[in-house]
Length: 425
Image (tube, rainbow, N blue to C red; front, side):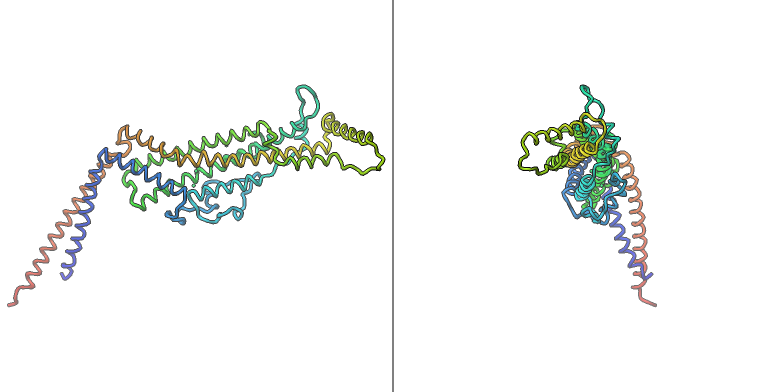
């Protein structure tokens, strides 16, 4: 009985808390007005985009231990860039590989890994059989055109080499923001690898943005249907942006491997010239009496030998093999440098920037289109009103129960107090 005076204040506190809960429910019910719901939806749209932009620009508000990923985590969850030998680039060579990153910092690290991997690719081996098979027959003569041979080999190997990287990188950015034969498939493979990683990084921005909104009390609790619609619109945008960017990267790769432009593909002509000059042989110092006619005859002889070995003779001489190899190396490296620069530029312009300058309008358009239809399909008003009504009834019952307990214990307390003040016999 001594605890009765202590119970009454506890019941009063419980009653006040239940009253606040009931008032909140009534406020939520009053907010299920069409105009108010649209205002809340538009406000959430603006706040969501603000947080998204903040994540791209850089922030420390979201805890790295909860949302950040090391490069190893990113490779496991979003996919790894696999080299032509089937191995991954060493983690220790990638800047910030061990740091738990998210948002724009994670995107930048993924692009850095792409540069390291693709920039270190060497031209695949060239066999004598490939050179002979690439020689073929011209439409006007049956001589050998080693320039064309080198282009055929370099273009085929480049396309097979770089294509896989494009697919990898697109997958990596779809899980965080696709074949000329052996050479070109590999190039496109690298592009695909990059795309996958980047879209993975981009999609990671959604839950982190939601966390930031929840942390600041700006989250639309209880409106799961609306939030799912925003999430779906964001993911659809990310995937369509990835496909569009991939198509643009593929256009560049196909164009640079379809037609060889020497000013673009041969990046080190001085080195190539020095390499080819070695086939002419060094001039042997002669006697002072050597006349001009002898020198001219030697030059003509060397020219005839060169033509015989490179144009008229189908036997693949060592000198011809080395010439083709040197040309292929030059073309391959030119394609690699152009592919690397253009792919990074395309991803920045057509994958990253649309998040900043296109996503806001697309989300708003999707939102207004939904508002023009049945609003119940956007906010699930019927179920929400039913749920709130159920909570209201339960809260009212709880209030009545607490009130009865308060009255009961107050009477007990009054009764005890009355007996304590009565004088003894």
